[in-house]
Image (cartoon, rainbow, N blue to C red; front, side, top):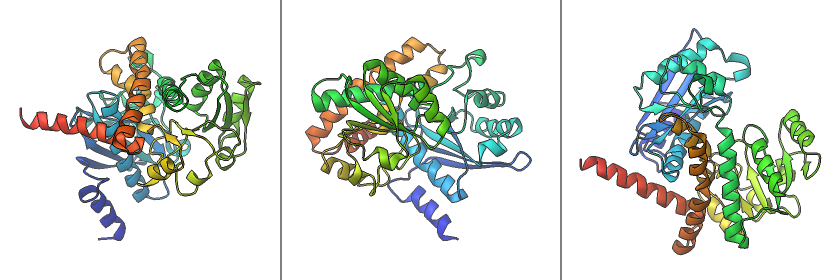
Length: 365
């Protein structure tokens, strides 16, 4: 057994980051599909989480990402009040090079083989049009187009939820939920980030952006010739003078041993999943006097939206649920203060309590 394989099995069966119910490795050589589907928990209901299509450096890295993301979805769905557990899938490869109808259909067949234990949706590298294809083979597919019975782009409510988390953070820290005049730095202005810019500018916030894609930055600057500026990279952004809020909205691991000491913002609240690079970072953030709004709480607007598809989508109903992220975030800050722990730990305690109670109720039926 290789060291890598041993590491994966140890994570699954022995570590605090494991405990997953099921991990499925999927391969269809004809289409080039290589995928991992991870189901962390079905205590609250069928696992729900998106499909990430990404050119991982190694298969082992892909498995690790699927495990981490699936676990995060359990906590996210619990805190969003959804009757869903957590799951996630990753497709290995560059979507610009290998994505095809044949590959997506093959992937849909693998999801369908799980019989509804896992419900999929969009994530990094997958879009509404892709979910329409997957749905041709799998009825447990959300994030579809309105023409195909879906809710469309879930990034709209993801951004709205992050915006509500920012408002709650402002209320907790400064005694006023208004973001007018606040300086907000956004790293990543893609599917979610560009909607977040719209909310912030509508309220009168000053926005600083960065993105590895020049076209994404250019689109924002063209739409907002005033009130938005761009910097070269994330390293520059997190060190910007006068920054009130930092919003990581790209890939995970944004808060690590290098970035946390450099942060100038008093609040971190963004859309990226798994922002904490490793256990203990949340304490480092708190020790610096920075307020961290847990990522899986504030970015839950999207999963609220796709979950609603399973019951007949209603945008106003979903937006009302996503607006409650404001109250949930405030409740987490209050619990953190009462328990004397960082907000990330407080959110975990609340989510774990809900999952534990659901699992206990199932065993006693």
